[in-house]
Length: 314
Image 1 (tube, one colour):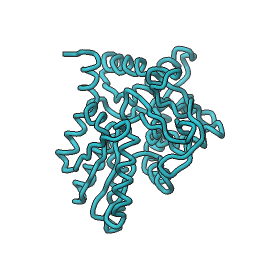
Image 2 (cartoon, rainbow, N blue to C red):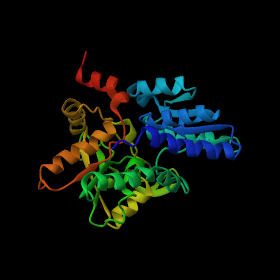
Image 3 (tube, rainbow, N blue to C red):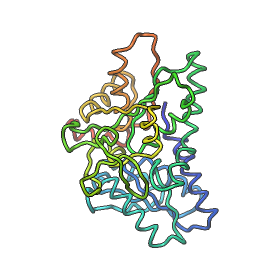
């Protein structure tokens, strides 16, 4: 199931409408993979409100197709060159603009992170994915899935689809984090697996942090997943053991990106390919009557230039 498209734009339309209702003159946001940025730029174009997207310079280079889309839609893309030049620093940059002019700016956060009410708002906007998936899966198969699997960075797509199945105790919810070059290296963003409880961007969660509580640099092949924290709702689901969290490496992600494209004709976002990679590995261990629902959280159009450079595709 693909949750971008109309669902992501509906999420951003809700935020942009709220900004307009509050009399704000500009909507600002961070983006990693650019999906949130494109959706928000679309919503702001429809409503006639100024849009400013903060994006790490590394992600700008990796996600060029989405950067071009944002600019065509009329958004201002602010390159962030500080720190790791990726998603965490884009959030820092956007928050600074908000704090410098709170009267005129509205922060339309892109994931289930940040201080209240942001995690709740984004969860509610994304929950339509879970509700529709729950109804459609039963219609298509006659029953519930045994597993629901989604990639997790900040966690918005996963929280959206998980929300539809939280009350179905027989359904196992699995979030797949980016293991990058491996969990035994410092090149990953597996917050649930390797993080400790702390604070980032005004909320408590599991964080990849140093001894002083400062966020550590993180890495993922997927720009939308390289964040050192994770949504507080996911932390709760882990703590109460309602959801489980695992990981997939960059190589597993890239291999599945190509395999799904060539076997099914579906080019997945690199973020989504983490979930598909784990689902394929899990499926090989299960009886044939078990059912797996994977949230394909985005299309890979945005990633094709970057993947082509990695694989030397001429």
